[in-house]
Length: 440
Image (cartoon, rainbow, N blue to C red; front, top):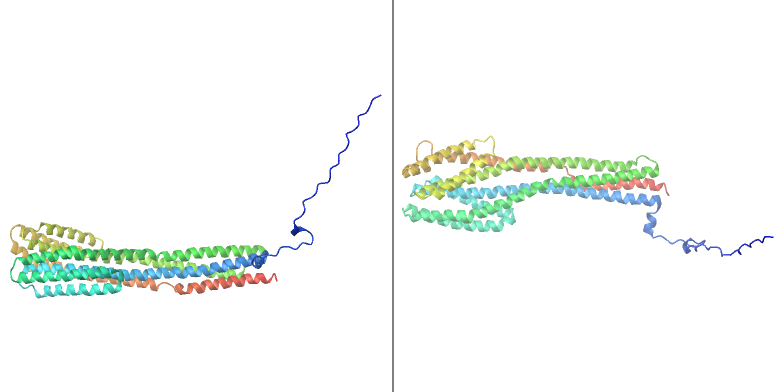
């Protein structure tokens, strides 16, 4: 008889208890209250309000950026015009100084009383330089200190010239030393100040020309960002409300788009016009001014070489250096007769040097001061001087008129930008408020 094994006794375990629900989820428990701001942005209506605020704020930002962009370009054009005018003044001061020095040195060769016309030209050149110094100091306060120092050097220079004239009329050799000292004051004290002023104003003009194009960045970047926000808003509304387009918001987008296109094109045209002015009339003005300054410097050194009587190699080298500058600058002025006129003067200078080198100093002086018949130094240089002065006046006036035209061509978005941004924001508010009404 087999015995059966008994099954192990069954064990009992208590039923697993579920974790107690948090108090907020228990029946009858009160839900925590949301703040008024969070409740305002809750659900679909809340998201509509969020899009309304975002799109409206972006519209106002666009208006501010558009206004800033146009003010940026308009201000840069205005400052470029003012700084270019200041640069022309400083270069005119430079030209008058070297012109006066050329008159003084050339007249010194005459001996005794210099020609009245040449003396008057010297006086007029210094007076014009003094007038322009005062005008330039008023126009650009940043230049006042350097211009004041320049004016002091002119007083010293003029005093030395008068000493040279007085001794030269009496035939005293010391007169030539006074003339050399005056020339040294001009070269070592006056002209370095002028050159520093020229460089400072050239940098200001270049900076403003570069800044003209920055205005379009404000308009284009802000316009594109605003259109992106409008597009996202329209897409979200279309998916939630099952309407393909929201007319007021679309109208606001069109307003922003038109402003961006019109403003961008206007600023691009203004920047292009300014760039053309910079590479054409402005560069020609600089080239002409530099050529005239170098030409007068060469003229002075021609006379100083003769005054030195056989020991003027340094002055002749300075003449050659200045003549190279003239030729280089005239190369930047296509279609001009100035190169031929300067070439005629250079040919006379070669004859002057040949006569002086061969011991015919008196004949060289006659050729240099215009006493020699036929082509002479005075006649050929005067032709170049008058032609280059006329061309310089034309080019500097072109800079002024072209920059003024560029400014006048800008639409009035500088003061319409903010109203445009506000109008676009109101259109957004109108469009979204129509959808919000459906949830009330």
